Image (tube, rainbow, N blue to C red; front, side):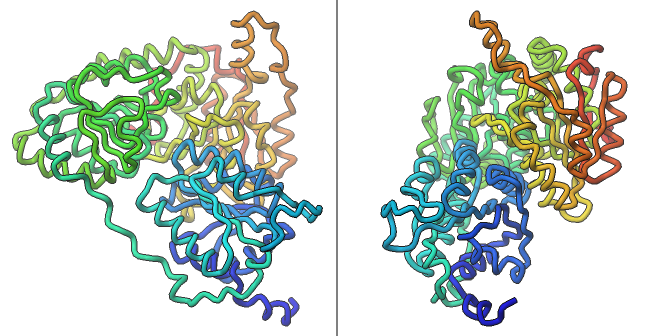
Length: 557
């Protein structure tokens, strides 16, 4: 190392920014080193931060998302200027639509060189405006102090607002200049107390819930870290709970009051629509989560959300409460302890609803559902499962897999992108302590080809990670869409690689399950063996037998 150069860059803005991020507890960054971002990489080793070099910046964004869902901290991505930042745009768009905390750092042209259009390396017309069009905010800073303040502002949003992606562009001359920021200014600022709801509104909501004969709780992604309080509310009210896919397992899906993450199914939506009081926690009730134009609630609606803009979105609230879902749920519990001292007054039998939900799942795609049951039964009970916008996931596995805790199914129901599952699984695995929970990515062949390069990242990071590739020969749903519209199938039947050989070429271990009886043993062997494993399942392997009677993961009675 050149000592003179090292001394020159001993305390740059880049270091100040990363020291501030580290002070908030972030221990890993995802990205790709490039010519212009090296001063963001210089301090990482000193700070004890794990560096995950993905093979594409989109993978860095999705890896950071998987890491964030496990830790509760924002995922951090470092890109270079121009094309590196642009490559991360799909991940930024995903984080916005799914309300995920993501902090993207990139260098930019030097101060005074904006819009010159003179052909400098990676020159981009207006990077801040480009990202700002799809992020919560994008800020081009002008000094070390400005950059550190932007980091603090980002964490303030992540801690107390609707979590969404933010981008900080640091001009190259600012990035490499002495920071001029005191050590104390780089310390994490105290976290604010979770925002409680307006007392009068909470009292009115408690009154409605206490008087309900058929209460129901609908939990979205905004409630996913409020599981204990939401479970206690459900038990006091004797209220069934259904979740969106982003809110999956807010309440343990084995709980007798859980109807699972099945809001997309008419059988589950019908229970919510028939409730005389529906409590909606942390969900915008968007069409992509409903698979219906709107939720036609017939009773009173209580909505709780950290964002006031959400309270009447897609469904008007009878009572709207702005606040943190955990804090408001605890307020409601305190009032309901007085209003319903002998609760629960009722313990609904949900057998009929579970039967109707199971029947609706099975009818949608019988062969795919049968395969999903087989996969689910072979997974360890505490597995983290990363899915993609693949039929095996959105038509089946996301519904039939019952999970005990939130953020165990990594998925993007709104943005519905391909190429998410594998890098998200990498991020989730990186977030696990030594040993940790098993992580499995379940993706279609089309989805895996969007990000198959990240197998190299998983191998390089020495991860224990199993990838299940369900091969239906291409883009099967789009093929059916074409047929339904009278279009001769075009562009949807795809050439397949030798998946086992491809995995082996990356340094992973490839396996193939050609018959139904091979699937569970292949998955169990892959997970137990450790390292990076790929199990290739041709679609026909899951279509030769009826759906399994149970999708209870292995290791759980």
